[in-house]
Image (spheres, rainbow, N blue to C red):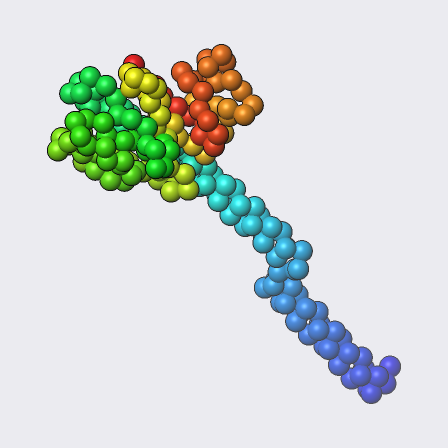
Amino acid sequence: MSLTKLVHSSQLTIHRIRKETVYKRRRRFGFTLVELLVVIFIISLLVTLGTITYNNSVQKSRDSKRKNDLQTIKQALETYFQQNNKYPDQGTIIYGRIKCNAGLDTTELAWGSAFICNSATYAALLPRDPKGTTSYYYTSSSPNLTYTLAAALENTGDPDYCDPIVTNCVTSRKLPCQPASPYNYCIVNP
């Protein structure tokens, strides 16, 4: 073998070794496009599941607040009944509001305002719906000896949720009353 062939052959071998080493180094420190897409998909899936779980817990929290608010209103109405021997009227300007009927006071009370009738305070603040899209609903039957309070729950999986369009809530024994749409939860006086 001639000296030129030997030199040329060894240069080629060295060049091949360097090229393979550089390729191996790059391969070791990088990610393929498929690997990156898989990681992006997994992260997107986790974010989606986290968002859904968070939204469900927020809905359940607001529904719990609605139920507690109706109990607070119920206590104020019972105090009103003890002092006046009747429950307040149903609002006439805006249906679903509480209207005083104690003495000469015929004030219609907005949700979120104080429950004061004839200078007597029954609740420092009538609660308002936590989301604010719908208000609570109050109705009183003549001669104001019974009433119904209603709210619109968000979580359709709630055991107290009853869609009045689909189900008769009273005969199905889900609720003690039949709420009017868009309300799907109600309570009555004891």
